[in-house]
Amino acid sequence: NNDPVMPPSACITFFDWFFLGVEAVFDLTQYGRKRIDGERTYTNRAGKYIELDPYVGLGNSFSPEECEWLPTTIEFALGYSYEYHPKSMGRGTGTWGDPSQYITLELGLPDLWLEPAFLYERDIDRDNGTYLNLELGHTFSLVDGETDEDDPILALRPSVAQGFGNSKRVYLYDDDGEHIDHAGLMDTCVKLELTWNFC
Image 1 (spheres, rainbow, N blue to C red):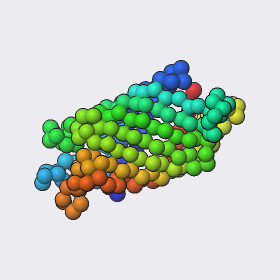
Image 2: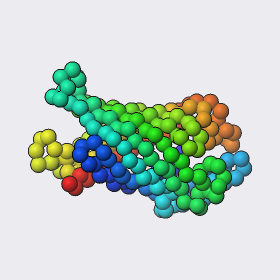
Image 3: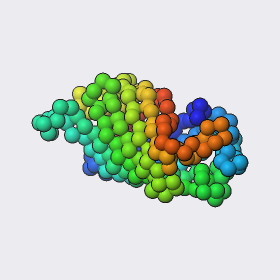
Image 4: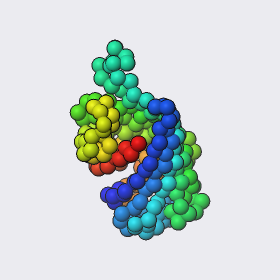
């Protein structure tokens, strides 16, 4: 939809491989127009959180220095997330009111200027649908790390992304009140991320 959201998140990584975190989604507009089967499934949540997503996974990066056959650094992450919606988002409707669970696989090329990133997401609970996302962006260091090898302490990353869902995933979207029954594009997105690596 055309309503912007703000998703603050926090993540901690252990041993360079294991990570866990949580993300919240706050609605910035009076988004209460979506209807499914004639029922409103979103109420006006302007300024309030509409979603909470704890997640856990394994991930790392491999550089040409570690693997000589790699042309550039490759990042990957395999994760699990649980999507929770507050009760006011819908009560047991089998749609947005119910929680859902996802398995995700992310791949990225952080050393390229456009930093392409690819996401594969599988809903294993609500609709058993598949979602793909391709993102292009660039990270600007606002406060550098102590050495050239360290991540920036404070970084700003503008990006654009385009999602694609199969027919099961796109079903919950609608076109002039009619359910979409075929795979298609979803979630054209412009993002601005501010990251603080405080330790």
